[in-house]
Amino acid sequence: MYNMEEKIVFCKGGGCTAKLGAGVLSRVLEKLPRGEQDPSLLVGYDSRDDAAVYKISDDMAIVQTLDFFPPMVDDPYTFGQIAAANALSDIYAMGGEVKTALNIVCFPEKMDLNILGEIMRGGSEKVIEAGGTLAGGHSIADSDVKYGLSVMGVVHPDRVLANNHGQPGDKLILTKKLGVGIICTANRVGEASEAAMEEAIASMTTLNKYAAEICRKYEVHACTDVTGFSFLGHLHEMLDDKLNCHINASKVPVIEEAHRHADEFLLTAAGQRNRNHTGPFVEFRKIPFSMEEILFDPQTSGGLLVAVKAEQAEALEAELQNAGLPAKIVGTLLEKNANEAEIIVG
Amino acid sequence: MLKVVNAMGDACPIPVVKTKNAIKELIGAGMVETLVDNEIAVQNLTKMAQQKNYGVRSEKLGENQYRVIMTIGESADEAGAEAVEEETTAEETCMPDGRRGNKVVVISSSYMGTGDDELGAVLMKGFIYALSQQDELPKTILFYNSGAKLTCEMSPTLEDLMSLEANGVEILTCGTCLNHYGLTEKLKVGGVTNMYVITEKMMQADLIVKP
Image (cartoon, rainbow over all chains, first blue to last red; front, side):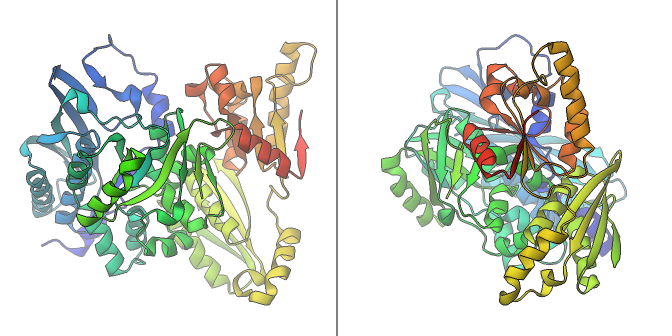
């Protein structure tokens, strides 16, 4: 269907590893002119949250998000599924339900159009699985392939799950394994095993819908999805200068093989940018190098990270696991303590 | 033996992969010089060298042009269990790394010395420039109180600090201080830190330099 030459051009190491660093980005964003504050905009980029939330009536708000990136796998259909699952995830991270999605496509004019067809087939299948409708899109001729979605969802204004409303004492639950960035990077240089790559793809194509539906039944105070800024980067945003936390590294779910590749330094630039940005807030207590790298690894279509009331944490963990998710209680939110590192990984 | 690896235009982890291959080809001791076009690649290469206990230093050759030189000792690759002790001592003596030893520079004010502040600011700019030109660079530079202003927008020493950072010097600014001066969003170089880390870095330093 497509030849090897195109395949190599197709995947240059993408996914959320292609994201601009949080540090660079915030320097640009802070300089943008702001119009009048609209009180109906419940969540905007002031809060560094996952998506924008706009209240349109007392019982309805719309959730808006946009995500697209270059391929991180060789198979176009799989890439389409992953890109869509990743874009849809932001709606779930805000506690919303998916309604409509628009395709966003960059594609080289000379490349086989069947490849584009496969990408979009993968994407639209995921939108349907999410219960949404693919309502249109926009495509641009470009030197490299990029694909993603702009997604609109709805949420009750009182049930918006902000990323920064965690309470001291809350338990943190992560719903997917970490390490997909490292596995894809290793795969690009021919080092990843087939089994690990399959596990990474299965994880990246899994919608966070199922985890989100289960979380809704519990007293969840804060939620975000773990993507390009890594587990520690998104956790740092969740703490929002108001909380500290303790992470139990031995409980963090990881695709096992990622350790081996991290020890071989098959690491992304984005991972190092994450370390530069978030590293100063983290204290590692006797954590092996590979685990540090996994915690800074940019995740494409990563899991949800939720802060849940402590008494309900074990029940939530069990229900997520019963649904087939590799979810684990990975840590505890603590009162702000400026005398200690914000995030202690032990 | 010196091997040169051209990794200009290569995205991570390719520079690391190419460098690892060159190290394998050395079969024993030698040096590998890797050319890359971005600072993050320098950091990823340096990280690998530190984990592997290779000597490492890096320099900026020009705009988007960096050189990382690793020194691989005889023992580094073939070290058995009994050679561990020997290996660590060998590393310390033959490490050409500009950051040898744990030297920490502490900048607690945006002025150098007391007296005239205008003069103090000029002196501090001169100090940081001179620091960036040393053969032996500090491992870490800590900025606190009004020193925090030096890592932020409008600081006259940003370029020198960025060059120090590109050469692997860790630059950390006190978060409480940035907050106090309303500079949290203005930080331009290095990371943010807290009192716990500042104290630890000073306690573990072999030498503290305080201009």
